[in-house]
Length: 328
Length: 261
Image (cartoon, rainbow over all chains, first blue to last red; front, top):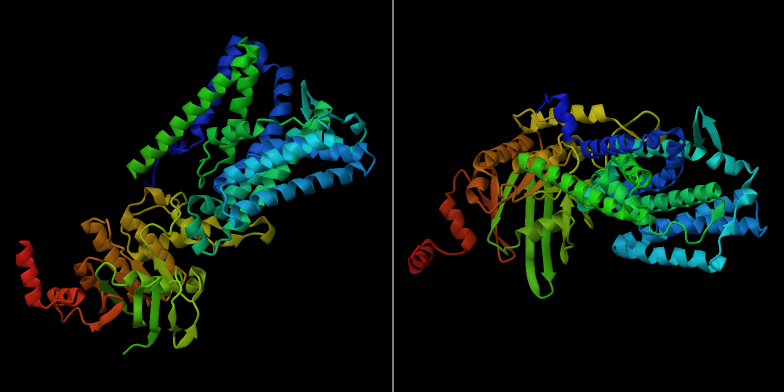
């Protein structure tokens, strides 16, 4: 047991399956259409991938603690609407509107966490309710119309969040930088810190964690707040990049994000989570969406492939888990 | 005689109208393994749940080293040095041995803000603890609990209690569902814990297991303690069985022949 070979160590890692799948995907799409790996296509794919990816990173920590958040898609639409309504109406500067939008998102996350930990209602029901509340509010304050965001030009905040520049032939948005920062920080928190140990213990065996003095409720509330704030940030970034704050944007993102996380190897039931796996999961799904269109499969067939990937990866993860437990 | 570590005095517990504990006085001394025996529903579990903070007693007092204390939660009990080990429930199976040992009390290195786990220190302690508790096999400290056997899991739980200076380790049915060799291992871990200065309460259905480790045996029946000073070296298993069931040898023989056993 002490001297396992490198190959054995690698195959025991939950990230191996997703990694192989991503490589196969990239190779297959590239073989069929060489434009797939063109700088322009890579730049385009990256721009939106990192926006969804930010949410998936935060969701990984939340799911490791044994909860999940269905309201992220609504918050993704709600927060930019709040920010731009405040700014366009001349109520505040863009910076203050930005801070208010993030604080409101934090409040939404706090409410989610409070309902889940204090009233002991399953996160599925709590965040489903919050999904409707946040979406409804966004639609109500805008009368259903998109908010203009073209006043963002020349604002330093917009440049910091999504300013773009060319790196060789690649058009890179600042959001890629924020995604990398978030991945490094959250990966470090989950794997290397005390708090990360508490997150995993809360999801694995909350009773045992509580008996050892771990404040499970506080950890979960903090993660709900993190997930909401990151979803708000992603929504704001997206609204600036696409020059529109649509109260309907983000619909359905919650399920795509959860799919990314579980495909990467994080357990839906909690206790085990991997940021590297989530990054792989993010790219597996986004590359699939982009590649399918490029190789000429009708875009409407996209969900067939996504669904199949989810089913296949789940079969793989659970198969490995069962084999490891049996092998003891 | 060694000093008293725990004294529970006149403890009663009512579940509705059911008297689970009836004026129980129970003592554990320093460096002593107390075997707690009794039939199903005799009140053993309730007694240790009161002591470990899982349920509150209806009346009665608890003293730790002569000082009266209130135990309202499992956290209170752990703070007083009372650690309860239930089969499986105390560990997070997804986490490694080292991470389980230090759960909630993880050492941190570097700047406080970075909150960084001192993984090498944890591994170091875990390795030496596993040796001290008596696990012969060389198990790496980063092994997840889920790939350990039942006996090894008990060993990790006992090791944790020993490392964090629990003065009293309560083991509830630690030999349930274990094989012969594993059981022997757990009994050895318990003896090692006593030899390094810890007291234990050992609860098991299997009287023979209790006889092999206990310094003193306490028997409960119907919420009361009916014998609290049985010396396993000078008492036979049969005699203890009579005390547990409350039947004389003649009664037992009659029921045995009546049921044809």
